[in-house]
Image 1 (cartoon, rainbow, N blue to C red):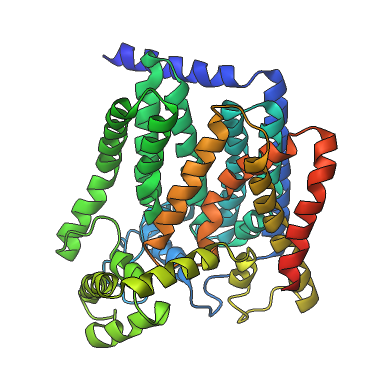
Image 2 (spheres, one colour; image 1 turned 180 degrees about the vertical axis):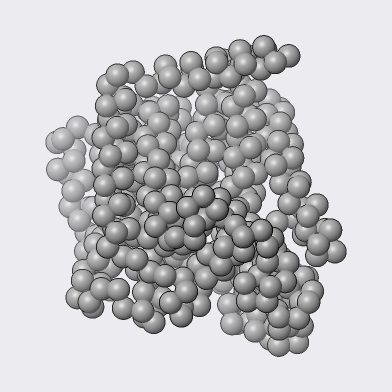
Length: 448
């Protein structure tokens, strides 16, 4: 059995190595180097400290990781109670860095720089599997130079880590579709493993198997085979998550699958007051400094959110449009987070404004190019376009389950880069025709 396992891994590695001939290795190295350089420069320039007085998720991630690295368990740094308020994956990653090198933010930022650059590289490989080298080069370089992706490199937030796992899982989904039968099982296991690990970083990882099921059903040998493949991935995913769920039951005395914040996040997306609405539940069932309060608040919030969903169907329809608008409205939120929404000045106002316009301009250009890729000529069975549409559709619908924020589109931007890379791969004479459309998409939103 051990020999068979080793042989399976060798075949999988050999299959992956065949993806990258010498020319592709050089292009991949270029993508990685550009991404690494830009992220490294920014991480050295912008150095926010979670403990500088701000109040955001980075405070929890950083201090929970310190507690873990010192052997104090996964506890809420505000209360010192055992917690599942945030998914544990990112804090555990930081804890490993802090255990090895001490609680230094340099290590956290270095991890972001490397994982962000690796995300650009994986984007290149995904595009190469679904299209050609010009599309792959365009997609990889777009991710390498994506301003908002760069700006997150200095933040102790989970976005960069989750996006790396998310895109790597997408690669496994694509490889499972294309691999010979003898190797497919390994890619399915990889998809399940990465889905589970990603979900432990951010709850949106739950929807990776949905992307797999739809991709395999539409582009693969049929829906029954897709169902079997998805079952393998889901079982693997469940096994990855099981130890954490058991821990939550034993420690919190409640069947919390990943995080107690699920109910609160759901309620914030399904009440008349938006994110502010949860304050009323906190006032009645909190504060969260009380033992067991986070479980009670989550349960009540989920129940109230479901009640609103059922009793206010017209309001829900209206809110759906508003959520999609808020999800994709702009792309400079990383700059807000760097400066703690204005509480800590990191750069002068003029530089901040210029960077905000650059971030938005690049983002809207990618969105415009993605749309143009859908309108351009395509083959009867265009795997890249169908895969990208399925992934973006699932991500958008997933986001509608909760409240939305421009930060939440961060992980799906590599998929938009696949489409934009396709648009850049057209003949030069067509680029001259498309350029005014992209330019208008860059300028008009900035003037609004």
